[in-house]
Length: 389
Image (cartoon, rainbow, N blue to C red; front, side):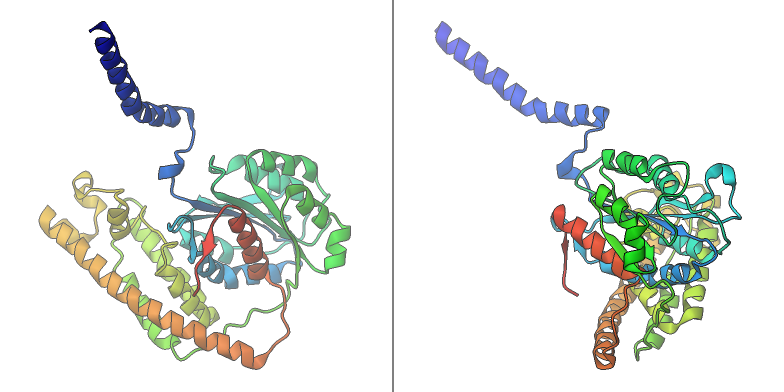
């Protein structure tokens, strides 16, 4: 009898331990900062450090022109069937107009999912001669940005410039060692000849960091091929903007920023605006901090939590039921517009690819080529996959 009671007692204790341990473990992990891999949404964190000294206007133009092409490339990424979150930060360095006490460095954006903020920052860049401190800006980005603690996430820095990599008060070896301790890969892009960059430390920096060394023709002008789909995509993009429901203190301001970045892309070419529109219908383009449709989908906001003055004027006179119907209607309309833009973008991509094959131009390495090549290598090492277009 005693043996039977003892056996039952052991069984009950074991069941309790097995049942409650996962809950305890989850709580303990949350307190200790350990990442819960099973429930962790994958991230791509990308910091771009751009030399804005006098000779780098071509580098800046390429970055503006190819931002949305990079986003479209990453929008096809999956890890375990889940589309990762894309966060981008931008720094400029080497500009004499910046403070010497800060190493001639300025952060344009923190790591952010708001890609219009990144676009705004890139269009705000100007050049001015200066001192290019590569080690200084790398260490600044590593220490100041909020990097993921998960080794499953992609965490990369791209630094682009053309002066010797060894300049400045912070040795690049020290900066890269700091990056590696956080699991951040540093990739170097020399704006100029490949051999020249290798001789001036850019290759050594990449090798030490376990990243890629690349050279680009920073003066190459990016050409956007016009396509028959561009006019309709532009019309749909304007309709897409009307589905955004700004809320909060900065909602209206950020909705205007969205339209301003459309206008700046469109002023360069209809092709660039079409690439931007394709990005805007991807999961990488997330504005849940100011748009109620995105915020509701993410579960970030409840209408009951918002005061009337935080809502657009059209919603302030509605009761909560009507407000929910209004947001749901905008979400439905957005989905319809997104589907049409997606279909047109696919047809446009096929058209552009065909035109590029017909012209058979000599391949020139640009910012987009350097970034996507390195990210693909990093993604493969962490079991991310790129779906076919």
